[in-house]
Amino acid sequence: MSESLQTVLTYILIPVVVTIIGGIIAAYRSPGGKTRITVQHFAAGVVFAAVAIELLPELVTNMQLLPLIIGFSSGVALMLVVRWGSEKFEGGQGSGSFVIAAGVDVFIDGLLMGVSFDVGIKEGIIITVALSIELLFLALSVSSNLANEGKSKLRIIATAIILSLLVLVGATLGGTLLEGIHRTGIDVIIAFAVAALLYLVTEELLVEAHRGEQDSAFSTTMFFVGFLIVIILETATI
Image 1 (cartoon, helix red, strand yellow):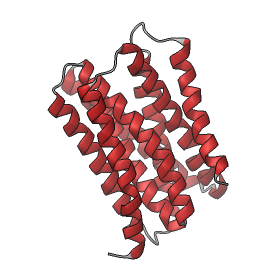
Image 2: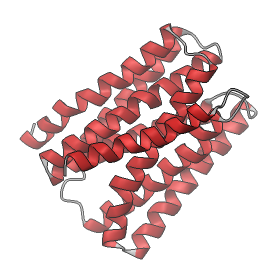
Image 3: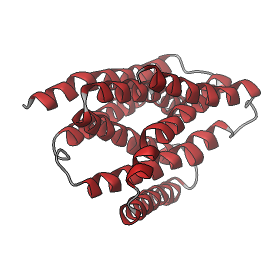
């Protein structure tokens, strides 16, 4: 095992553990409607901030039009296929598309963590800490939805473990197979990630949060709190 991969796997234990913790918390102490909606708003804010601060600047700086179009279009297409498949399978009911979208998200997060350590240890740690916060609340949100649907504790915890493994797989892939990849390939991956994460925020997290009558000004505020925390983490380490 290379020293670079060993470093990635050491730090990746943080998001892996917090993802599982989020699932266990929701499994044994399922949050009420208001808490679940608040968590979903907060997670949406953190994910949106990760896109705005970590990913979009990379695309704008390099500004290669073809990789941008290919990656972004592929991301949108995949998430729409996931939505179509889930709605067809579940008849429009259940949280299947939400879980799958979250799975794509956590895999991409792991991928970004692995790639970020190729840039530098400092950059890798910053992104890992920011995305670990996102993953904790994303796992809480997904697990809360499953608990709200009456899923068993075993299924909820198993889902959280699967999500954590996707983080690990993504980080390993980012830290090894993508090492030395041509810049164009990196741009395609980043553009794909932007589309997938924006879909998660706008079509899953916020849609789930606004489904029901327990939304409030406080829960909406938590979206901006999540966004602000990521900005603070980023500026504090510059």
